[in-house]
Length: 412
Image 1 (cartoon, helix red, strand yellow):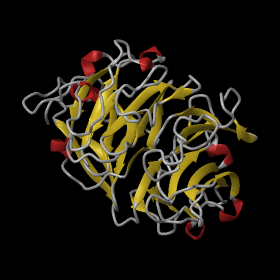
Image 2: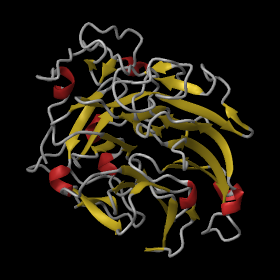
Image 3: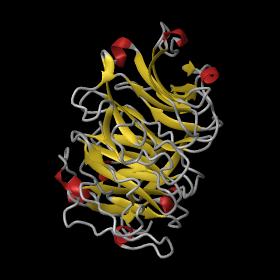
């Protein structure tokens, strides 16, 4: 595994893109965010092939010290799935819920995939291109009320947010319990976003793309009065725009096609897919309303419209930019901050990837800057196009490809 040169991509112009690099402020906008449980710098440095970490002081339940971390590996969980796009689990639940784009949610339980899906709404879902069943979020009180939420493209290709509840059989949802809560007409078939997650404030967040096509064709990017290109925030009891939203349902805007966001304490991490030159990862305070992430004024840390001399005052710039051509990059896949117990050396590392590149990278956000950047691709190998990330109830991280779910595991 090679050590990355920190911020090298952030500071360099892309020769041939014709886009001017944005001058990075000495203090990035996200530096004012509240950082939950900052990670000590002693645990965030990248690992080179000739270096192993010292044995962790963290011990297992049997108080046996861990062997030094040599690297990471992918452990196959299940294969043969119809394009998995998400993995999740409710709190304190040993089961793994696997979302496939065709409109089904499958259960991995006690080491095997159950024959019948937990939920099957394939007859309600258009599974074409970027459309399909795209998001899943469990009510924080799922253990008591059995309620969960899904985001999908309906048979007309439009956005639907619905709730369901589990049946008397906890391994099956009640298909008749579906209740449509929110709908949005989609002007094109791409840029559907799709991630659903409850934030630290207890509200439900949904990310939608800018409406599709290319170059912000519908002019949604810099509009705060539209649900497209935005992060939406809802109360669920009763359902409606959350109190404190700056613009009706909209919590933040200026996104192109956010493909996976996640929360870590009081921070939100967003992977936003770029146009044709740059991908980006944004980190910001989850509690700050009305943030503008810049699209289409900026793409990554470069001007987009206009291609030079763009005014980025008031814009929340990304903390990571990845140029197309870097490792085959074409479409960023946002991930998660590691909070599991199997790899304590990587506590606080945010893992992310790219659909085309298939690489695996991580970094730590220390509240003011990116540190500890690492590329794990040589360790884990190439497993194809990475569609998404997910976590189990214990904070371990999973990766999905076109037909397989893997778990990130330590090599000791």
